[in-house]
Length: 336
Image (cartoon, rainbow, N blue to C red; front, side):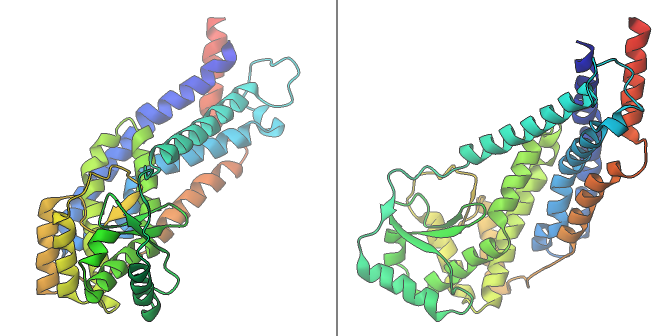
């Protein structure tokens, strides 16, 4: 029974002290960034994404890596005072490692299942001329070359991107029939910008982090701001790649007015976005001059931070988790 005290204490400290504290820091930094960005679309940068996921991912990876290092026989002997009946490694650390890995697998699997689009009533269109027309638009544009587009009857949204690792575009057949080639090309370029930016995968990562973060609700408003700003950035990239601003603005308005059932699958990015006020602002920006593509080093900084979180526990004989483990073991010995 004593073997459970350290894993439980470590998980409680991480999820109810460390992660919430880092979440508060992230919230303050993002509030400062909202005041600093010159244009609204600038909040959709990679830096914002990094601040949304880092408060959860960095401690989770650090604790998992620390537990893995501590479960090794040579590392566990310095901090484990409980006799584990001849076990070569520390049972406490093994239990902690198993709990963390189990949590990650279960939560990722659950969110992946939950965010799978429910498209049972949707099928490929039988309109061969429409399919050829869309294919011709894709093949005629160098940026759209290789883009996977499914023209479907009864699609729940006019145009949207779906999928995590191999995202593709779904185009509602009825919406496509009423749109001219310039509108469809601009809309597909917008969705291509989502695919190029891995937006469905990144949004999935943010939702996963916020769902297991007890203080995740603090960052939900900034997550929505980031998603809306990304829509404006994708508009700018579509125009930068040759899409007509007026055609894209018309497509956004048509998509917003298009009669559809509400598409609740989170793992998608729809042309009409998520908020009416955002739609008005996007159209105004397209008419006045869309934002230029914005790229920052946020992904690089996030990758370095996560790499440090994974590697650091394996350097040095005793780390923070080992000290915490030792204190828990000493506390157990004072009680028994």
